Image 1 (cartoon, helix red, strand yellow):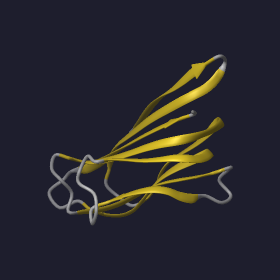
Image 2 (cartoon, rainbow, N blue to C red):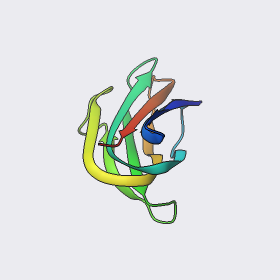
Image 3 (tube, rainbow, N blue to C red):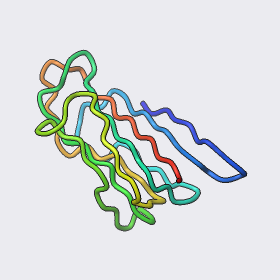
Length: 119
């Protein structure tokens, strides 16, 4: 399930937030085409019910969906459940959440939160 908001300022898109819950499989979980490029992003991943055994979640971005690159990743080998990861100065008009690897263990799923803003 996905929910989110778009924040406007002066008639232009200033920020966006998206939360995707109940993720239990790998693959692309969200694709957003923004009105204009945003250049600062935050990625958070946390387990539902318990901490997952392993995860590899990537926030990807680009001009459009033809070619996207990884802007920031959140993975169990270097990040804790719920850690906030940020990236600044990488403009993207199209963003994607990709779950590249996931072992739930006793967790029932994961939640991924993305916030993007223009500065």
